[in-house]
Amino acid sequence: MTDAVKPRQPPRGRFITFEGGEGSGKSTQIQLLADRLNAAKLRTITTREPGGSAGAEIVRHLLLSGMAKAFGPETESLLFAAARDDHVSQVIEPALAQGLWVLCDRFTDSTRVYQGELGKVDPTLIRAMERVTIGNLKPDLTVILDVPVSVGMERALKRRGTAVPDRFEGEGVSFHEKLREAYRKIAESDPQRCALVDADADPKTVAERVWKALRDHLFSVTSVRETTKA
Image (tube, rainbow, N blue to C red; front, top):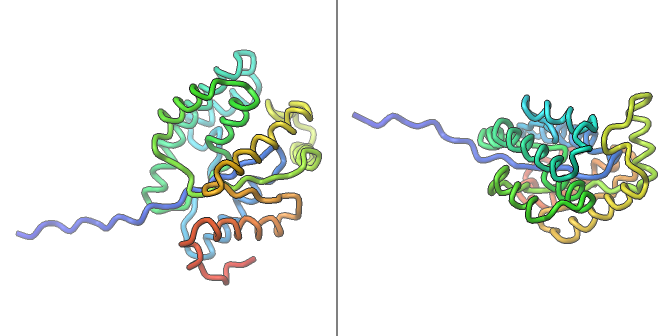
């Protein structure tokens, strides 16, 4: 009696994260990249943090509404970690196992910057939470979209219209300047994983810069047909 043939497992997908300050254009660039990869017959999923899963979206509302701010940055960090744990286990890891390219709006670098660098949460605590929530999971590429603070804040204002600024949009200029500098430091300290992309341009131009960064960092992508160019 012959053994049953096991179904062939697809190759593991790629994990691409997008980071940057408010109004840097992350959601726009994620969708443009997803469209390009899909055109190349690569399966993608787009997601975000905080959020991305049913449980994490509940925590997202709590965080961005500002209700958790009164408890301090340590508590905010724990809430972000709880949301990330659910997001990774319910969405990111299953998608990667199925061979999908996961494009995520924010990930661990946001916690390192917002709660760590700016909120002064002990880096030891942040690293401990990362070990629990993501284990060995690491982005194949992190695209850091860099724009002058004045440009980002103007974009954020235009995007939300008459809506009330969220927890982080409502911070002052000094906060956002420090935020930008912190992201630039991350890009400089980890060039193998991170690509700092000038996002002070129209979406199509920025998308070409993102595509070049992706090809430069992920050599397998060079096999993707050039006909996917926008």
